[in-house]
Length: 391
Image: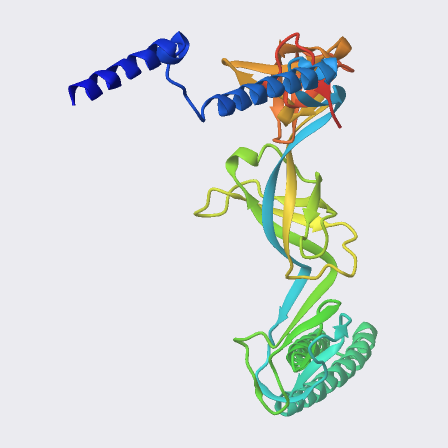
């Protein structure tokens, strides 16, 4: 047993002596070297590709990106501010016909929508009783006229006899008194006949104006009422709008001023109108002033009852430099615009603005006529740094 052991030890020592030193010092590592090499190669390829792509790009794309802007020219023009009044279109002349006589309606001659002329009969009321009174008054008037004529003939005869000395002064004066009384009776009879005649005319109701029938509240066989309008007539040949203005606008407008009237249900294009009436004082219990605007040539498409807006010019300036309101901005408490110079290089400039209606703004100072102004993107430009102008 001991001899086998020694032999075994000797054999192992011989194996160690025969093994190279590198193999003894570092044990072999398997499965790690290839993945690391692949990753390194991929990274190198990516870096080379990026460098190559960057080198192929235009010079401009390698510079800092330019700001896109839109521009306009500073021009002189007119700027104004407006205030809106609202109301409904109505006929300039509209009449409610109320009968002046009471009684049973015998006939109605018009219908809703009919066009009538002034003096045309609308309806009639039973006038049998008043007609009888008129006939009696007419007879009384004729008798009074005959009595007057007789008294005049007698007076002429008595005057001749008196001048010839055939009758006394007393007889002549009695003839004069009789003639005076007969003349007075004629006047009284004429007044009575005229009064009854006027009353009789009230039983035939006529149109006071030209226009269209907009309501009919009577019918044959019913009783006419003096408390309710029987017929309404509107003259639509002239249309107008009634509204009111507050105190701060009363001195901004005057009678005769032209205005624009917009009826959105018909068109976006404004109709022309004129301030027809402006109240000198506010209505009782109100702080507003009544104003009436008439439409000039409204056309057949405009009807009474339509809702409309009236644009009242409250302030107006002409021949001033105007810019879009969007071109002006405030930064650091200063009112600024960006003026585009040569080579598309902007200059941020402080300006003084004036009238501004929300769409356009007046430039009092800081900009000259004809200069190019940035109207979009100006908040992002840098003074002196080139920009790109786009449409």
